Amino acid sequence: MKVKSNVENLQILYEDNHLIIINKRAGDIVQGDKTGDSPLSEILKTYLKQKYNKAGEAFLGVVHRLDRPTTGIVVFAKTSKALSRMNTLFSDKQNVEKIYWAITENSPSPTEGSLTHWLTRNQEKNKSTAHKKEVKNSKKAILNYKLLKKFDNYYLLKIQLITGRHHQIRSQLSAIGCVIKGDLKYGAKRSNPDGSIHLHARKLSFTHPVKKEKIEITAPVPNDKLWIACNYLS
Image (tube, rainbow, N blue to C red; front, side, top):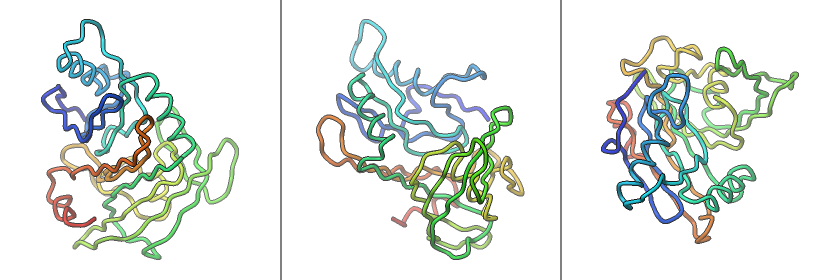
């Protein structure tokens, strides 16, 4: 899936001298890859260069990434100090809470709980497999979930990430029979017309690395009939 990305497409949720946080669209890539498509990191550098009339190239550090078909909150650092501190914050999970919304084909049972798996990653297929028990070269993955809303054919889940693994939410939900809508890689019945999957990085709260104050960000959902039906929920 491809989208035409440029400075005008950016939806900035937060910006100060240290950080810039955006609401990523489905199809955008956070960093450059083999496709050669313009990544958000380069588009944001252009934005910063234009906004602040910088003579040279603007500094921009990638704090974390989202999968290409996923939407929602992505954090970038505007200084090397902020990048280092945010990396430590995220890796140590100090006062950081990540909330995702996922629309799935089935309802989990029970409707609220915690999932623990051990994930192995296939680099060639760019896919992770969730195992019930620890296996060789696996990494422990934990998340909490709660059913928020039932639609005619789909279910909205709130996901709190405890660990941050490759394709963690996608693989763990697939392992319990709750495949995310549109996620063909993990067993969805059909793709979404725009190539997206219904996984959205909805909320992020953390302690600012420099100001030391609490920051809470909420990303508006995509312009999609199912997502819009979720908008009134917290």
